[in-house]
Image (cartoon, rainbow, N blue to C red; front, side):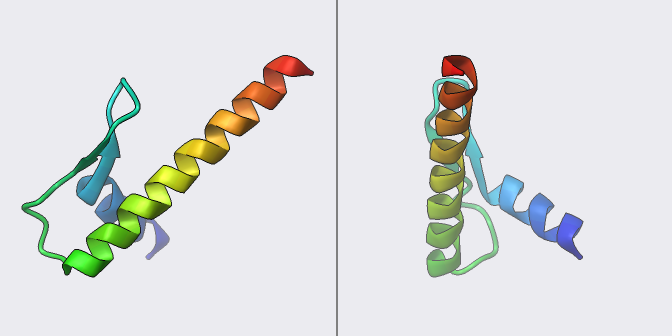
Length: 58
């Protein structure tokens, strides 16, 4: 079930090579759920950037 959720999120919201969030407006989800997925992706991106910066500074 977790893998299915991950696939749904990837199809709904993605991050391009420049770091921009790409939202699939064709997704069959409510706007509220799509917005939540976008926020989750943004926060995950920020956490990964922080972890990467911390790794290189150590």
